Image (cartoon, rainbow over all chains, first blue to last red; front, side, top):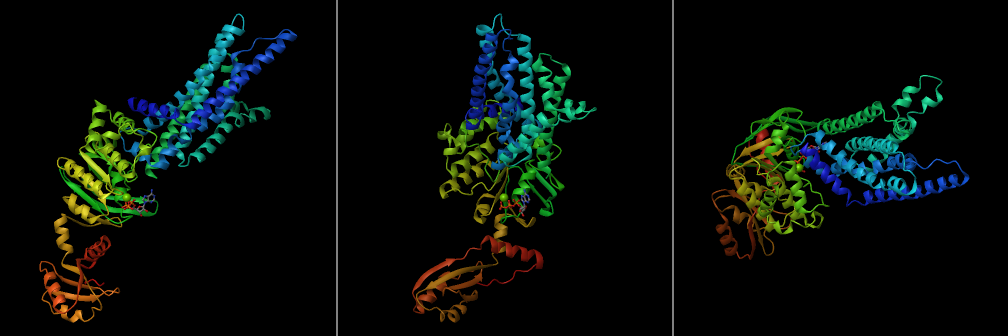
Length: 249
Length: 314
Ligand SMILES: Nc1ncnc2c1ncn2[C@@H]1O[C@H](COP(=O)(O)OP(=O)(O)OP(=O)(O)O)[C@@H](O)[C@H]1O
Ligand SMILES: [Mg+2]
């Protein structure tokens, strides 16, 4: 546990001196800010014509999964690939820590950084709740949407960490992670919409359905949580295996 | 302390080391001497738990490097060939990170101690990116010494250092080597001679010789050679010099200088100098020719193969 924390803390700190991490954080917050204003503008228009529902957290976070699809790979690409390239992996692989601790620590560092960004975005629902919407927003929906976003980012980062453990070149890792995430988010569920029957399994396998029809609709289902958590564990396991296989080459 | 038996490592189809066996005891500095690609780094990487061997076994402080890798890694300090550092960290933060990974109590004091040892304490708060190559090498050494390991494995610890720093680093190694086990690799024969209690000469994945530096020296120096340079043509000197008692062979080198070989222990150089002067030549240079590492390998591999020392030619 302690080793995981040591690795994670170094990684977390590293993001605060990394230009890419700053760009990612600023872009997310900027886009969310603009989107926030658009949501407000639209709902005020609708209120003008009468009978509108007030904006909700799920509206505010509407672009978040899409942004994380790019932010995740950008944040995880160098995690292990770069250590491999510069040779510092040799330092970590000869330190008295387990390969799993290394991978989990790397993932946790990235996850904590994304959690920090997500925490900052709380400002938007808070503004809505206290100043703009009377008598306040749906707090259950807010919590479930945020829980969903947190789990989704955990999965994205775990996939990115595993892929970074496979590649020596961080841009190869970036590209492969983007492909993997787009596949898991958009494509894998697609047969469910075209197959006359039996396509439900694909919808279940895809990442997005659990989010949009679960967390972002205010329903927290234990099976959705288990699905995301087991994907995180599975990918961290893949990453650990990749490191072990590299030792054996 | 280090016990290696029948170690073999294949990278795909290429065999990097084959059937290596050796030991290093506590308080012993063992040198791994060999040319590029001999398998020094490969062996060290197996000993430090970076990768497992294809065949064979190695033990450090009684623990198997594969089965009890974490135990081994706790007891080993390792300076890899690439000197792995994080340039964006400060020297102190980097060493503190490594100390935390090793769960050192009072980590900050131990970081300071290690920095004192390598004389880098004044750069503790500087960024690693701003250090010179030699300084980085010393930070890498501090990292290896940090937890006061029982066994130190140093892959080319003095490469890229200026002469003063080489002396400095050698002193540190010698000091550490008094109580602990040190295995270091080098291309430099004199370094191995100065530092090591025992030298393993490795070539193409095989140990071709293992002995104390003195014994190796004696084995290699069945004959000594010197270079002689005089003003003008020296051809006429060849028959004159050949008559001197002890000289075995005199040859003219392409650049016009002379090279002579004589039995070691019978230093003929004063006699040669006298003869040159008395023959009316002006003496420019008279200097020993050291065996290069390559020649030593040639010599040793020839020894291993045919069991006799062949004569060398210029
Ligand atoms: N990762 C690797 N993959 C494939 N072959 C390798 C790898 N590392 C080393 N080798 C090969 O193994 C052999 C031994 O290499 P090694 O790095 O152990 O030599 P060395 O004695 O440390 O040489 P140097 O003095 O140049 O550092 C070489 O033929 C090298 O090409
Ligand atoms: Mg090497």
